[in-house]
Image (tube, rainbow, N blue to C red; front, side, top):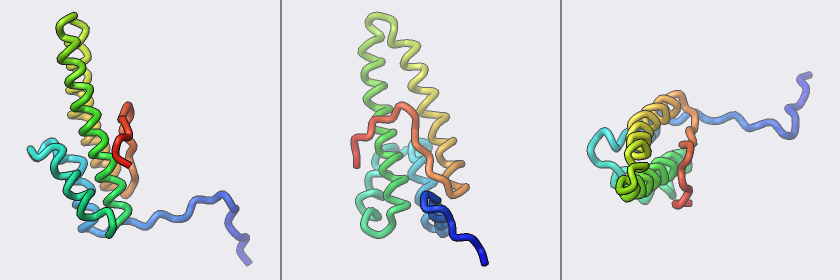
Amino acid sequence: MEAPPPLNAQPPVAKPDSNEKLLIILCHLSLFLGVGIIFPLIIYLVKKSESEKIAAHARESLNFHISIIIYGLVSIFLCAIFIGFPLLLAVMVMALVLPIVAAVKASEGNFYRYPLCLRLVN
């Protein structure tokens, strides 16, 4: 007989099917597709009642896009006192690198939480 799993064990995570995986990856890479914040918003609104996996990734991507917009606007405002230039550069690097990392993690079936992301959409 096998021993029962411990009570605090995480349940096995089901891998998303190919359509779910494609939508999840596209949500993270929407900035590179030229649709930015619009695509994750549409996917979140359409799929939130159908698939929690897609909704969770779309929500995370949407929160990241909103955060990047806010950080970019604050950085542009701070360019008047010259501190905004390095901040704007950091925001641009974050906006380019982190969605790629998230898409790679999503393609492996994992969930990626963006660092320094404001959680405005729940």
